[in-house]
Length: 256
Ligand code: HXC
Image 1: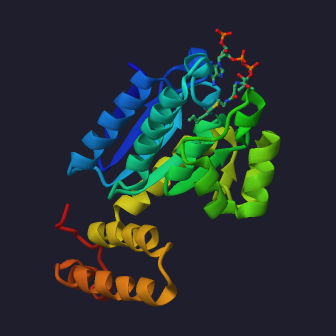
Image 2: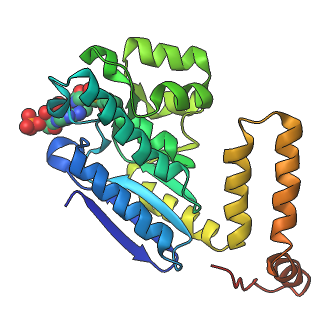
């Protein structure tokens, strides 16, 4: 087993667990990851997910031994398997926080980018070193990196294969925050609990508005926002949220 999935009340914690290979991703791990994501999505109790890695790495990339000697067809299938797996994280209805505890290289940076929010330990290291192996990023890196940090920084990372520390990742907008290593999980779990305490549908539709609106022109994206705003009002969440504020009490959400 390469994936450990735990739940504490409303928050699930998924740990990538192959520390002897710095959590390098193989087929079995990607398949287990897919199952764990589906389980988390289907669990009505869970409102937010945190993903981290065991040991000194978040994920040191795709398994290099697995890729050596690929035919072009095998390479395409591997890229598509990785893309669809990390794509499941991005398209989850529930919010996902990457707690980047160490090396996040190649597929590791790519998986982190498919999460909604990235928090880095001060020991985290990011990079897209595929060119050093004579290949290109293939789990979404050429596209999500460009959207996240802009084409200039994305090209620098993709062309040089250099490593970037957590502070550099923060400066380029690749991560939201850097925290001391021993505060990483408490910080991320606390943020996940805060998110889990908010309007369930409101959080879900905020994610949908950002994810689906970002590739639309502004007019269409604003139309999407107004439509989703109306959808929330088809439930009793806004009534409960506003009522709780006015009555100076905590809201009680009913939807899952
Ligand atoms: C397979 C890996 C691995 C990887 C580390 N290991 N990364 N095995 N695939 N990606 C293994 C090592 O072989 C070693 O195994 C053990 O983990 C510990 O690694 P060390 O190198 O001894 O650790 P250290 O000296 O601390 O160096 C850490 C490191 C280095 C800087 C992260 O391991 C490294 O550069 N790894 C490769 C990173 C990389 O290139 N990632 C991108 C992969 S391509 P043994 O058995 O010797 O103890 C990719 C493409 C995605 O991700 C898209 C595909 C379509």
